[in-house]
Amino acid sequence: MNKIKGNRLFNSMSAKLIISFFTASLLVLCTLSTVILYQLKHHFYQQDQYTLEQKFKTINTLQLQNDFIAKYGTFFELGETKLWLINNGEIRHQTEDVDLPEFFLDNRSKKSVDWQANDVRYRAFRFPVDKEPNVDVILGININYHHVFLTSFTTVLIWTTLFASIISGIFGWLIVKKGMRPVKHLEEHLQQISTEKLDLRIEPALFPSELQQLVIVSNDMLSRLENEFERLSEYSSDIAHELRTPISNMMTQTQVLLTHPRTVEEYQESLISTSEELSRLTKTITDMLYLAKSEHNLLQTANEDIALSPLIEDLAEYYEMAGEEKGVTINLSGSGFVHGDKEMLKRAIGNLMSNAVRHSDDNEAINIQISEVDSTTRVAVINKGETIPAENLPYIFERFYRVDKARMHRATAGAGLGLAIARSIAKIHHGDILVRSDNGITSFVLSVPKQTNVK
Image (cartoon, rainbow, N blue to C red):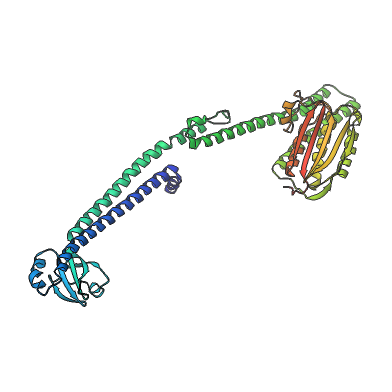
């Protein structure tokens, strides 16, 4: 349980922002404190150097006369400044019994040194004497008071930095809490959405500019979901209607048949009618399963080079016989090749031809035109019949959609899945189907790339 809470805290955007704000404040304050402390130490160093330089100028002016020690040695012994007189690396005179570091004595290039002797901290500077190339004067000073001050000041800086970081963290928490209110507001809006309230939209102007694009995307997503739910509801209604009608017909016919004894011929006619309804029902269910599989890439597919002319000639012969009662003829022109699944493409083109035969006027010709444009092969199925209203064209490929809203079950009527299956097959082959209907001429154009690998 504790691990889950820890993960929630770690995944919390507010917690991350607060921690980041606190860390950034701490780093800035630590950097500032370090700079201040460094500058303070450097200031004391420069101050000591300036003080001792001024004293050396006095000594240098005297040019270290022979009686210098006798005249001025007592002055240094009584003062705070310590003096060492160095000649060729050896101490000729010192005002106090304080040992200099050995490395400082031996290295004339080193100009200053800090060291500790007998719990006292010293700082010394080396000054070369004019006209005396082998003689150096080292002046030193007690810097215990510097050390005490810097130690105390460092402690104050540490506590101040820590306290200021905590205050910054608290302010950061308040700022983040206030800044996250629009996100909480958005969450409350989204929680109101359900399958019954998909029409709920959020006003982007109510949110900061950083969240407005997210709100717009959410509204677009809700619009798509609303459309899909409406389609799903209509689809369910369509399925129920398509399955209920043949079953109701069979039930009614059977109940009428059982009201009193019938002749053998009447029973045979009833069975033939029932068989037709069962065939229609089986075809509808088969088409639904095929469409579902094609949309989810569950169909077994094959890739091969296909010559369209022979394939469509066989289909034309079959559907010309199917439209013989209406006196429909089918004319084929052009040629082309595609690379894809032969049976799937045959079914797609067959569905377009079946639709053309069904909706063609009597004694009219259906024209099928094959053409190749650049890297695309097109098959146009054109028939003369009733014009499809422009407002219906965007929905013509939806499942169970019929322009005839009466949805009458006639012998020539289909289930409304043929065009949906045809477009699904076109999509599998990275193509599409477009429809146009003007002045009684309706054309469906299947476009498929010549070289394509079926999904």
